[in-house]
Structure formats: structure tokens, C-alpha cells
Image (tube, rainbow, N blue to C red; front, top):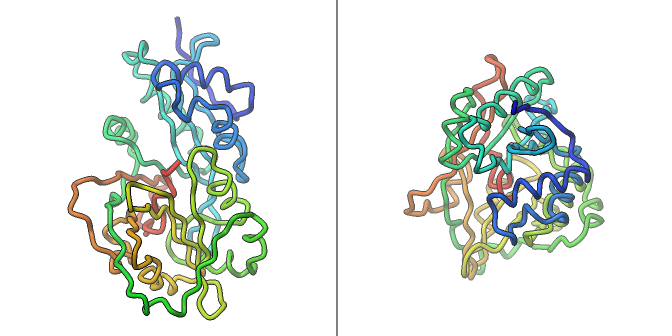
Length: 305
């Protein structure tokens, strides 16, 4: 039977096929088999629904790469991009080279549309992505944010964000100033933050607005990690120079871990942990004249779904 590769824009008619394929590999309690998670993650993104790169034989799905749309900012312009996530091939069809075929198909379509692609592949998937010349950047490494003394943050106020309305009340400049950065970064909006973190169905995130002297300077987004440790999945400064406040964001009795590239400007506020674990990361533009840029602003939020 001939295998075909197709692209579909996610809608609820695809749920049964996604869950049926996922059930061949994942346990029954896996989040990716829940309709609520799939509708949120694949369907409710304010940047648009996910693209599904599907390997199929007749009506049977045997392989899948999900592309989640995002908007990046680069050199004063917005750039369409996507995260490659939830890659899976049917265990009984692994000898058909489906993964590489799906990457090739996706790559050709993204080049035509001028869309960049990002990913944090696991060790098994790295050779397939490298075969198609994905541009791997500096890997992310775990760091522990340095502790504060009780007096070091006396001018800092922290406000928990529980609703999109709180985000929408922030001044328009809060969302626009970061766009002036010369680094490649994700374009944030109240709608994107609410979808990505407040409305997540499988993970409870904490969003903290940081103010100094009554002026908002940034958002800190964390989730519970292990024991006393929280994982900082994103830190969104209003202005690039406000990144210096990263040293003030950890509470005295709180252990915050953050994954950073070694060339990130935030590492000076952290201790690198003595572990070998790192998170591979690629960001590919498919353009020879757009390769050498700083992507260190893209943090664990890129992969913490």
C-alpha cells in the first residue's frame, strides 16, 4: 500500500485519527490523547490552528508532525514561524522512513510560504532534523537563579495574573517595546499569553507581573518542577535593559530553575547546575542570508507544552 504525505489544518474532525495514532505508543492517561488538550493546543492558538503533517495509507494515519504557529520579531519586522512538536510514527511502520519523509514535505511547504521553523528534538529525532539541514543553535542548559536577600527586592512588587483582563489592562507600550530588541524573540500579546499559559489544560502555570515604583517592568512565568523547585519557562521584560531585574525575581526561600543558552545575558544572574542535561534547539530560516542572529531570548516556553 502506498504511503502518502499530506498537510491538514487542524479541526475537530481530526481528533479521532490523532488519538488513534497516539494510542499506538502512549499510555491511556497521556495528555496528548485528551480532546481538551488537543482542542486547546492545536485549535485555540490566537495565531491560528496547527498544521498537521500526516503520513497516511488510505484513511489510516501512520505518522504525524504538528506545527504550532507563532510570530517572531526580527529586525523591526514580524516573521511567521512554527514550532515542530508531538512527532510520532506508528510502531508497526517505523521501517518506512516516515519521519524523514514528513520533514522533507514540511520543509518544502514552509520554504514556499516563507515560514521559519523551531524545534527542541529529543536525541532520537536529532539525526532526522540534521539530515534536512536544520540550523541547530546553542543548546539550553539548566541554571539556578541566584538567591535574594530580603532587602534586595524591597522596591519590587509582584502581582499574580489570573485573567486575560489583567493582561489587557497593561499599557500598550508593555507589549510593543520588546519589539525594538535586535534579538529574535517571540511576539507576545495578552491573547497569546492567556492561551499559552492561563488556558493550558495540562499544566498549571503561575504568571507574575513585576513592578518597580508602580511601573510594570516584566512578566515572569513559572510552573512547579520538583520538590521545592519551580521552572521559569519565560521572562518577558518591557525593555531589554530591564533584563537586569532577573536577579531580583527569585524569592529568598524559593528555588527557581531556568534553561538558558550559555550566551544568554541572563546567565550572569544564575549559577549553572552541575548536570550534563541540555536541550537541543534549532531555528531554521531556510535563507542563506539570514543565519547569524541571537536567538537566546527564546526560552523554555518554546518547548514546555
